Length: 212
Image (cartoon, rainbow, N blue to C red):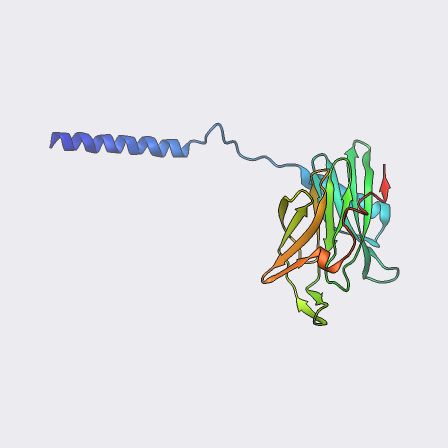
């Protein structure tokens, strides 16, 4: 009986220690602090509107290291429809933003999707637009599409798997110096390769249209 009572007291003591340890935050796991990126994104949106006006519409933005990447749609004159996409790479200083590089990309109107690459010293940017259908050139009809994933195939045989956050457009700032061979879009049972629809090598025209 005495042994049983001692065992019971010991169990209660150990349980109390365990609960106390769980209730005390670990010094090696501090609470995450805000990144501060949201302010930079807002200032970037203001820069785009002030610099290019209402016909250049911000679609997506992302912070990559110390630089800001903006994806915009350029409206056709007098319409709400976009005639092209444009990606901007900016660097912020105390006196505002400096445009480091920009690149225009075509809309994937007939194919139903597009892809373009901007290569700079600091990053490789993959960007484009998406629609809810693609054209099946073999059967001469459009197929419904809902892409959620992208696989970037590099010339050295390695791949990068990326997640789409929009059904209409995308921009991925990636590490510099990537040599992209192909881009594969996945959604449901549908898998589509850029190279099956477009003959141009993605890297042939990856230099900036404008650069600082």
